[in-house]
Amino acid sequence: MAEQGKGLYDYQYARFRDNQGSHQGYEFQHGPAGSVPPPVVSFMDSIKWWTLRGWRRKKILAERDRYQQDIIQMKSARPKS
Image (cartoon, rainbow, N blue to C red; front, side, top):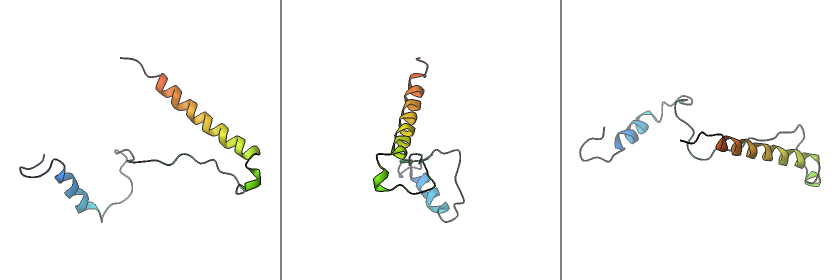
């Protein structure tokens, strides 16, 4: 716990500063903090400006819509308590 005269989280900040140089890899028990980049639809060739109305854009928009529907379904599938 926090010592008298110190802030509530000072011991955590001190532990972070002590271990900052020796950090190895990801700690899986902690979720990612902050923004997580969205998944990327990748293609073999880079997208060109003249293909923005073509099949690639339609595929990207379809993937985006599918991810949105997955999120909506997860939220609506929660049991009400």
